[in-house]
Length: 213
Image: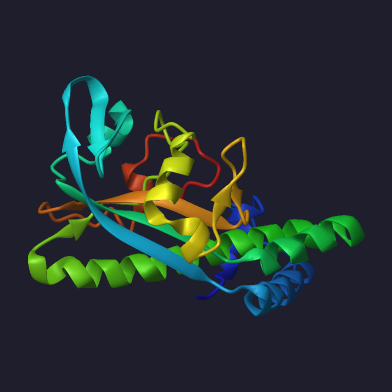
């Protein structure tokens, strides 16, 4: 797991702008703190999926309605359910700085966001290599809250992953992940070759997103 300075700057809103040396120095220091605090863990479960009419999907036997996710998983008969977290120590670090040094907290937040993305990408690359001999390829990660994929499905994913026990990942009553620097997602398996799992933004309809690569 690494923290790309350009990614941290993107999360800080520096798209198309150069950062001054002070900001770059702060990012370097915060990145090291995040890497020292992080205890990255992940959990992956391979499950069958079935697509029905009107956006109905069955994932590991559980039904939901999401036309966006159904379209995203077109041609997929299986998927990886995915969960990853940087661990509670990162949250503790962010909370401490939010009280004692807000500007540093903001930079640490950006570095932590870049870190969890880097970790997810590393795990996803391992998954890509693992299914390549089967002639399968990955669709991009698709998380609850994207499009019309209900955020409430966060808890179902955690249950299917047994994430509270295996990696210490839970959700609040409002379906926010805890620890906060965590990700859950569905990753489709398809026989259609695609590089979308690497260039994720090209498969996203949010063309005006400030974080778009």
